Image (cartoon, rainbow, N blue to C red; front, side):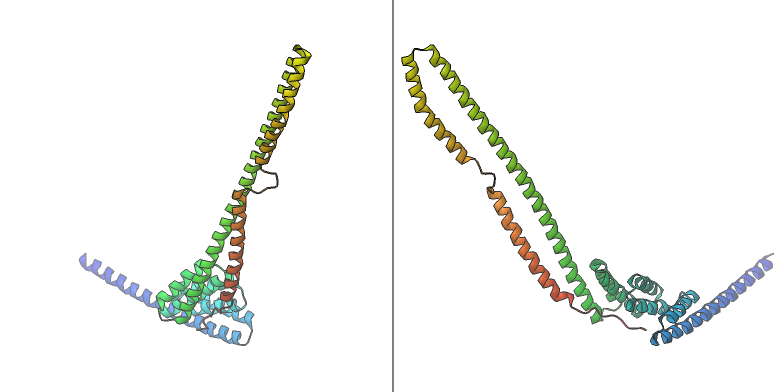
Length: 286
């Protein structure tokens, strides 16, 4: 019984080894076929036959997942035609299929270039960092990383400035609404004061009718002396009220700050133009 089990185990090991050898041979055959198709695609691309090159690259990719050169070169072809979404997908595929650090570096470097074209500077920074992890000596990638970081900082500063401007505009609107409300309250108080004065004059007139003419004349003279004084009091109150078109101290300060921010924003745009002209370099075909 033990001999039978031993024989079965040996047979199983032999069959497994044979299956692995067959599988490995099939993989090598598929990889070789994929490599040949990649060379055909490269040749077609060098002859400016993009359609034929694309077909051969796709065939090469379908033949073997171990051939990272095919998706990488197809990604470069898409990049040159400014088809950045397709290019990114192929560079990502090449990076995942690559087994060497050099190949991974090239794939992530070009992924960073695609993100730069999209102006997605945060993702470009991460892609260039990954490229440098695989090849820390590449100065071209290091330059692109520095550029991406600078553009990302400018973008963040501009977004923060825009948000600050929105907050200031909101505060100004709230201050204007409050000023209008205060003016309305002051006008109501003024109207109530005038109505009260008129009421007092009427009461004094009623008392004058109850008295004799002499007393009435005396009261009238007294009223005449009081009226100018009351009128002066009302003028002083009117002078203290803010005019409808007059800006408050807070509004003046807000306007000054808004002007300073606008000048700074113009200066930032001038500085940004100096950076935008920098060239983003692209890796060549393998």
